[in-house]
Length: 342
Ligand code: NAP
Ligand code: ZN
Picture 1 (tube, rainbow, N blue to C red):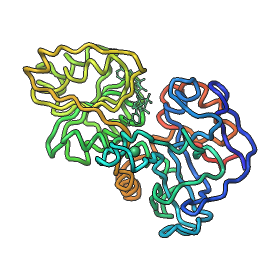
Picture 2: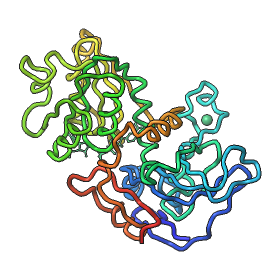
Picture 3: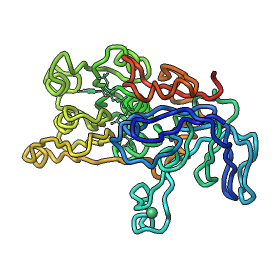
């Protein structure tokens, strides 16, 4: 079968490899769709630790083709989405229920072979069933949606809340929709690209702001701004110093900031502790997707999340190395790899 393998930093190739055979607990999955994520680009450039040679692809879904002897609830023909993050269950963090902080965390598509291939192995405990009636592309959104759900769990959004979302990539676009589903009545997306602001307003944002046209904090929280006094909740989904610094300043007194964006290791951001203290702004960080992949699968199956409009391109495996080696194209939100495409 064909698989896109990271063989070294900067060395990502499509190879002919042996089709994998599932162990007793494993599902052999024919990949229908796998999403390219910023992490894949970081792995390619050596900005994130990896274990080459390995097949990348951690946002995966497909059809079960065969199951190991000990597999209980899955049968060939079922569609599944895989939660890539495998915790050990033995370390201090796992035993406290903080499985995303597992000291021995391994991820499908990062530490073991993933979904940028015709077939992948998904352990049964990592698999969640999806309806066969769903368009095959939708399953690839479960993993990023699950990461957003973990952050949403911290955000405390209530009916009538006001929310600012910083960054209009796929994470920001999913968070905008989740904020509306959670009952927020004002959701403002801050992102530079006009096509993304328009798209966000079509899928749930009540307003948007272009940070290159003026100061976002003044433009949003000022007396004649979109949310005078600031937002109840600010969700940082850009992962850049500018938005990290803006996030607490966009929150109203007593408000909450949830950080989803990943900044480059070693970079720092300045805060004004005086301001944070007297305004009691909470800053929370959200890492991965503990215990929420099933809920993400249910949401995707429900059709309540617009994902079709977030798909910018569908590519086959042969075009994948080029897509990973280069930055996203302007306006692009999500690129899906569909190994069935030639
Ligand atoms: P992305 O496609 O890079 O989206 C981030 C977007 O932020 C950029 O495309 C850019 O859009 C916007 N941006 C950049 N500078 C900005 C600025 N100064 N003000 C406002 N917007 C700005 O990434 P993504 O896939 O959506 O992921 C978002 C972040 O979440 C990344 O850092 C990713 O690593 C992280 N992430 C975290 C988790 C977790 O578990 N915590 C999980 C998945 C992803 P414009 O060009 O339109 O401004
Ligand atoms: Zn552990």
